[in-house]
Amino acid sequence: MSRIVVFGAGGRAGRRVVAEAARRGHEVTAVVRTPDRHPDLAGEWARNPGRHPEPAGEQVREPGRHPEPDGGQVRESSWRPEPGVERVRVTGRYPDVDGGRVRVVAGDVTDAGSVAEAAAGHDVAVQVAARLDVPARDFFPAAARALVDGLAGAGVSRLVALGIGSLLEVAPGVRLVDTPGFPADARTFSLGHAAELEVFEGSALDWVVIAPPPVILDAESPGTGRYRVGGNRVPAEGGAAFSYADVARAIVDEAERPAHHRVQVAVFT
Ligand SMILES: NC(=O)c1ccc[n+]([C@@H]2O[C@H](COP(=O)([O-])OP(=O)(O)OC[C@H]3O[C@@H](n4cnc5c(N)ncnc54)[C@H](OP(=O)(O)O)[C@@H]3O)[C@@H](O)[C@H]2O)c1
Image (cartoon, rainbow, N blue to C red):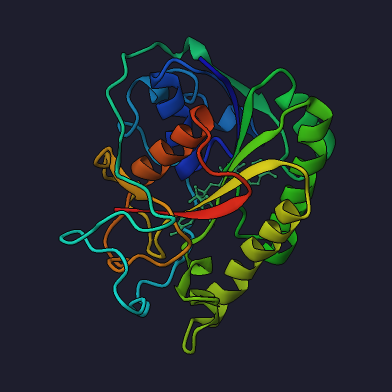
């Protein structure tokens, strides 16, 4: 059992991370800006994720189309482990637990003092907070800096963050975000995540950034419980549906069994 602090716990990814971690029996501290807006997070949501309405808000926009990576590196029918690409992880069943393992607290991921206060006494932190109403180039690096400083102050060395698929590569050294025709507004948002990565790279944190495929994630699906993880490439079937639920499984897997360190790593179907 681990003590996991989740920043952005009230969002689409965050709620699923909280539920997944609680189902596995971890002690979860769910950090939200306004606890009153998330009365179900510690109870009903953790018991029955998906049976409750989504939080209000606009889905983060992602381009649905992208070029195939050269060589079709990873395909379902012919997939073999390649350097940097690991075997399928299957998430097992976990006994139901009641909501007592989830504690909801107010906090701000862009404030190092708030991060330190929320993270004190935890084994690992998860960052899934995002804002669409402030420029991504401001929000994501500010959150990253506050996490680097705040987690150091709290003595928490491990961070699992959710990134963006557009920063994966379509060819060696070529990120999807840098390809011709990539939508300008999505590029601006993606570069905010890129600035966040630079902050992590310059820190002493033991971080990993989970990058889902560059598609709009399915918020309805309960997921499959199966996903692949590894490498830094847009997957060949990168346009295939992927769910928040499976992203949450990948995040909690990295939180409880750290397998990637100081890298951005792709997760995909
Ligand atoms: N295909 C892809 O690559 C892909 C797809 C989707 C998402 N993503 C990434 O995944 C991340 C999460 O996305 P999402 O869809 O879960 O977002 P979301 O539903 O909008 O949730 C974001 C949450 O962050 C919280 N938040 C905002 N500012 C905060 C702060 N200062 N301190 C603490 N919490 C704060 C918000 O809380 P309030 O309730 O207080 O507003 C909200 O609940 C984003 O970084 C996004 O770019 C990637």
